[in-house]
Image (tube, rainbow, N blue to C red; front, side, top):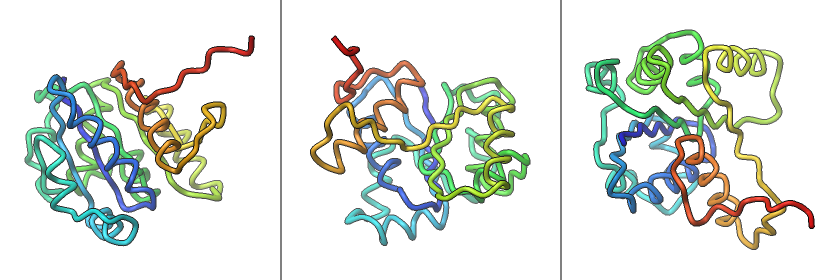
Length: 187
C-alpha cells in the first residue's frame, strides 16, 4: 500500500508526525510525505522535532514545489492521502482545485481518481466560509475527520488522545493499529 501524508501549516502538526511514526513501523505501507512551508515552521514552534527527523519517518519525501512528482499524477497508484493537520488555506486550495503546490495537487489527484482523501481540519471556531468549504470537500468525496477526542477511552495523557485520533484516521484505510481502543458498548 502507498499512502500520501500531507502536513499543512495549521496548528496540530503532531497529528501528522504521530501518523508517520505509526506508519514507519509498517513494512507493508510506503509513505509519501509532503510538508508545506508553514508546516515546517510549525514543527519547530509546536514540537521538539526537527524537520529532518520528521522527514526520516517517511519512505519518500517530496518537495512541495515539485508539482511534477509521481504523486501529482493519477497514473501513479496510491491508496489515498491524509492531510493532518489541514489548514483552511489548504482546504480552500483542495476544494477549489487550486493546485499551485504538490500537496493540493496530490489531493486533487486523489479526489479525481476516487481514492480516499481524509482531511483533519484544525481550526476553531469555524465561520460560515470554513463550514461551506468543509461541505464542498465532502461533496467532492473527501472525509472530514476533525481531531475530536474520544473520552470513553479514559485518556491519561495528551499522547493518548493523539494516538486514538491517529488510529481512527488509519481506520479509514483499513490499517489496524493496536493503539486504537474501540467502543465495546455499555453492558
